[in-house]
Structures are given as structure tokens and as C-alpha cells.
Amino acid sequence: MHRYRSHNCGELRAADVDTDVRLSGWLHNRRDLGGILFIDLRDHYGLVQLVARPGTPANEALSSLTKETVVRIDGKVSARGADNVNPDLPTGEIEIEVSEVEVLGTAEQIPFTINADDGVNEEKRLEYRFLDLRRERMHRNIMLRTSVISAIRHKMVALGFNEMATPILSATSPEGARDFLVPSRLQPGKFYALPQAPQQFKQLLMIAGFDRYFQIAPCFRDEDARADRSPGEFYQLDIEMSFVEQEDVFQPVETLMTELFTEFGKGRTVTSPFPRIPFREAMLKYGSDKPDLRAELELVDVSDVFAGSGFKAFADKHVRALAVPDTADQSRKFFDQLGDFAVQQGAKGLAWVRVGEDNALTGPIAKFLTEDDIKSLVVALDLKPGHAVFFGAGEFHEVSKIMGAVRVEAAKRAGHFVEDEWRFCWIVDFPMFEKDEETGKIEFSHNPFSMPQGGLEALETQDPLDILAWQYDIVCNGTELSSGAIRNHEPEVMYKAFGIAGYDKETVEAEFGGMLRAFKFGAPPHGGIAPGVDRIVMLLADEPNIRETIAFPLNGNAQDLLMGAPTEVEEARLKELHLSIRKPQVK
Image (cartoon, rainbow, N blue to C red; front, side, top):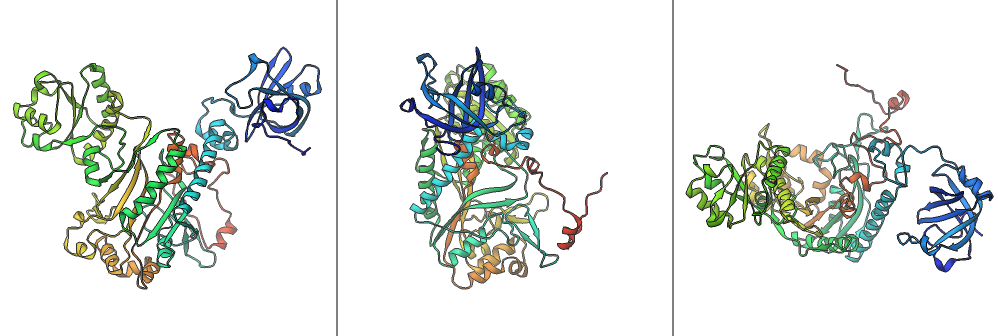
């Protein structure tokens, strides 16, 4: 018999009764019923119940061991009595009569419960992450991640893509976040940057003629944490294709996502094909460029209705309305709770009216609306008796943010939200440039390596803020999974685009010399995308926080509480790297 096990803890069944077995695992739980010990033994594969009778060496050994001690046991498989069968456990028809116990790894008193969620805070969980990962939910999440990544690889190869690796040590890149820098020992005063994304390298692979590339790529960005973004590092499915237009990129990605979310999506339907929604339309209808299409309500711009109105709260402001049908039976509490929700999003309040018979309006602001206002609203919103209408007024982006959130919340509360579906969409036609509100400077709004719609002519003849780019996002249930673009592969277009954003020719050549040089030697039209693996798994696992699907994440302050990173470096090492530390002064 093998030194440690003849079977794993998840595989024994009724057919194995009377078999002598050897198992190894962790002591998950222990119950003493009249001197008879019942032990749950756990390993990677599952749980099995052990039985140790009173007066036996096994009972004496197991009664004194702490939970999470690692043991090897020998015993015989026996059938559980009919009243003791556990239908929720794959091994629930059998138990192991233990004859011998060997301790393989002792455990100190554990700092939190493994076999139940005891509400321990995240900091403690991350400090003892190796224990946290023993919990069933966390183990399941990490194994889901493993299965998803394996499936992605197989599906990408089946779609004709080739997996390739790109460098980790590279040069800085204007991806929109701070780089993590690595000092060079051999080049004093110079630094490598960890890649924010393999952007330039995957484009260079296209120029080198490889046609269809993918990589499960590690990316590094020195940015703040969010629920859907881990600080420090993350992984993305990096994709690039040659001789393609926008729709050519969409097709394999739609196929991949449909198959992936069907396979791992717990029976939820994947809507297909994915709708294409222009950025500006998304902001108007949904208040967001990451719309949750499970909410089957849309916002409507009614600013014209109130232009020059005597109702000062709406007059000459941007006004967005949300019509919610089937609210005749809703109490005042429904409206008050939505108002409180809007305030939590940053609003001062939430104006509303109800539509009664003959389209008569009631509610807090009904008295401020003229007959013409009411007629215009009825037409613009296609109002019917039983509708409720909520309004947001103010600056465009502020109203979008608040009313976009109200749209989803109202849909959930009023029964216009579809729970058991994966609703994807493509957001397209992003602006190429945007204006910094503080400095007034024209900047890239998305990926700086994107091709402007209209090419060089558009850059030379149009207002920069009117130029659209061949850029796109893929969104699922209100979560952005990725941005992508058809790339700018023409040197003159690149010089011009960067010039509009404030980069002179010398700067462009200094920062992107490798790319420019490659473009001058025959670059194919190409494009790509990079869906976030962490976010995909987060959705599939139904987890609200991305750290719940990463084995060893940093905390919200970008610290590794388990390994103690980041750490200080001894003076000799700093000297070798030609560095000195200048700490901020404590005030």
C-alpha cells in the first residue's frame, strides 16, 4: 500500500464497503457522541467521515489532536446506517472504521474557523491566506479559476490562436496607470517597467507575421484597489489578430464568452448575439459605459422639455427621466427608498411623478409642470397609467452617474430585472480624445495606439473632441471585462494623433521607437482585446470582490500581509543598485 494513501477523501462509495483503505488529510471537524468519535477528514478532493470507537488506540489519538492537524489513517470502509446517510456528501453512504493513526503535521490553535464562515475580517484572512484557502468556498473559487483558464486555452487554440509569451521586464508605457519600476544594476540610474499590458509586444508579433496570438498575461499597475480590480497585478486574456476589422475581433471573442459562460455559468442563459451600443448612446440610455442590460429600463433625455421652463430646478439643465411601468400598486415607501438610494449616489434628492388615469400626474413636482410639459413628457416617455417617472437634473456626467445607478435599482425593486442571464454587449465608437477638466489639455480618452475613425484625414480636419476611435469594450452584467481596439499601424497617423495629445515627434520616437521602426517595415492592419481573467472568474463565482477569486492577492493598500511585502531593502543592496531612499517627511 502507498505510504500515504490508497484513495483520496472524495472517491469512496458504497461499492467500496469492506475495503481496507489508507487516507491522508486534514482533521476538518470532530464530534463526540457517547465516546464514539466522528471525524471529518478533508483533502483536495472532498470529505469523508471517520469513526473511532471508545477504548481503541485510534480514539485516544484522534481525541487529543487539534483541528487542521494532518494525519494518515488506516481503516475499513463500512456502510452508514440508513438514518445516518448524508445525501449532500458524495461519500455520505459510507464511513471509515479507523484502526491506525499517524500524525504527519501538527497544527497550532487556528486563528479562525475553517469549517464555517465565522465572519473573520479580510485582513486576518489575508494574513493567514493558506488557512483561508482551505475553506470550501475559497477552494472552490480557486479551482474554478483553474478550470476557466484551462478552458480558455483549449478554446483559443480551437479558434486558431497561438499562445506566446512576452517580456516582463520592459520599458515604460502610457497605458493610463502608474508603472511598477525595477532598477537596473548594470545600467545605473535607469529602470525597467513591469508591463501594464503586453500592448506593444503583441502588436510587434503581428508585424512579425504571427497573425493570431493569445496569452494569459500577467499585468502590473500601481493603482488603487476596487471591488472589481486588484491592486498590483492581475491577469488578462491578451488577444491580437492581423488583417481584421472591428467585427472580425468581435466574432471569436463572442464565441469564446458564449461557450465559457455557458459551460461555467451555473445554468444561466447567455444572450447572443451581443448588441453593439455606441458610447454616447450608452451614456444617454443607461448612464454608464458599463450598462447592466439585465435592468430592462432606459433613461431618456428630456432636457428640451424643460428648456426655458419656469420650474427652476430643471430649467436650462441637463435632465434625464426614467419611466418605470407597472408601479400602480407601489406604496410611498418604494419612492422614498429610491430617493434615499439616489442620495447615497450623490444626489440631493430624487424628483418623481406618478401617472394616473387619463395621464394625470401626481407627486411632489407635479404642480410645477405645465400642461405642455406633461404632454411633451407623455410623448417622449410613452407614458401610460401605472407608470412612475424619476428625474435627475444637473451636469451631464453627474446626472449620468446618479440616474444610471437609479435605473438598475428601480428595475430590481419594480420587477424589471432579469436575474438568471448573462447579458453581454459591446460598447463601440468611443471618443478618440477628451479634455482634461482642470488643465483644458487634450488627452487620449482610451488606448493611445488606437486607429481613429477616418484616419489621418479626420485628425487633420475634425475637432479632436468629435473624432471617434475604433475602440470598444466588452461588458457583462454591468462589469467591464475588457477594452480593445483596431490599432494605429501607420507612422504618420501615429505622429499626428500623439501630436494632438501634446507629444512632439521627438518624444514619440524616444518613447515608442521600437513600434515606429516596425511600422516602417510593413505593418498589417491589426486589432485585439484583453478580457480580464480575474473579472471573468469573479462573475462566474458570483463573488462581489475580485480578491475572493485570487489565491494570494494584495490587500486594498497593495500589501501582501502573508509574506510581508513590500519590504525595506538593506543598504548594501541599495548601493549595488545605485539607489538612495528619500522618505516623506512626517508632519
